[in-house]
Image 1: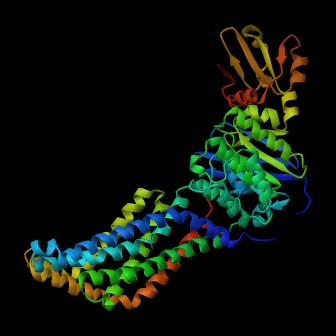
Image 2 (image 1 turned 90 degrees about the vertical axis):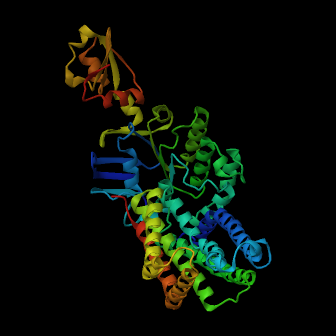
Image 3 (image 1 turned 60 degrees about the horizontal axis):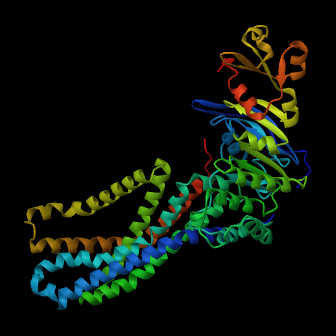
Length: 250
Length: 292
């Protein structure tokens, strides 16, 4: 008895991803264009004339992060297609009437996640170099490390989002849980330096330096573990899909 | 596939929910027949179908499909069945060609030529997105996929609900052709009894999780009848001789389950033939006994 072709299931996942990839690509283009224009203006244009140099450095960090953030969004696209299925029970009933096993479905969805992560990784590298060129800086190991960390973080968020939607049966609640997680990460990141920052008045030049030093420390500590983190996220995602697809209604 | 007499055999199926119980459901769908599975909304039709497809775990009972156990031989069975739902399960961004490609990989018996023949027969556009299809077109697409992989059993869950009479008629014609092969069978759940009047060979009636009637449609219709009489004459009729009675200001219509016996016992009364809709109405009101 021939089992359903894995490529048929993968074909469906790729079709679902098509629109999101297109929108994501347009978003990535916008997210690189604006920062590049702003950075070039900081260096050669009108912004250089009107904004003092010491005020630029803090905003520079955020501007440089924008392309990385947009690249890492591709790692979240597969969760969007997965939530499509989760929130559409009739697809679940239909696929249970076919031979498509929970294992094959989970594998197909996980492969798509890996593709999303791979696209993020591939896009983030040229984006990092473009931003470095526009800002007149060199690409450092920390820049690459930051990209990888962001991608790993967004992959994790996609798992949290998908799992929350499934267990709470609501996209809104899933979004709330994911937002909660993000806030928890931000607080966790800021907690070691909050004391130092509160001693300084807003706009103080040292604030940006403290932030940047702290960011670099975090990156250099966590970056070596990024491949493990990515593998862990992929495995968790696979296990979660398997659990969801195998589950019978009670 | 092994030899079998009944395409579906359900025995003692029980499933408890908070506020609803599928209670000891038992019926068979003979091979080569269309079984109309009737009941009002919330009666347990979809729950029974989900149990058949192993979507829902049952508390007790046994189910066989195509002669095989529905859990132990789940994957073997699913190669030979097709389920059609009231909503289209395919993503609305797909078109018919893409759906066909997906199905080609899902079933070893996929017949692409037949699929495109159905698309042409139903005048379904091949490259138009499903989102732009009407409800009838979506259902026809589902049916095209269901009939194009050599399925021996079609399970339809309220599939004709919301369709206009022309489309419903088209679909019923397709089923008549499908059943010309005596190896094929259909289980069709619906509350549109007029469709089942036209096409069903057998009927199973479920209400509040319990099977009230099951058997050949013609026999059920032959056995049941509506006894019409005045309110005065109705007082002569024993309550155990009728299922329930619709009482108006001037007359009474009572559903009897043994027309021949009722004719013999109440020889002066007018007893007319009935249809599935009336049977459903009168059985649903059986606890009230008299209603208006």
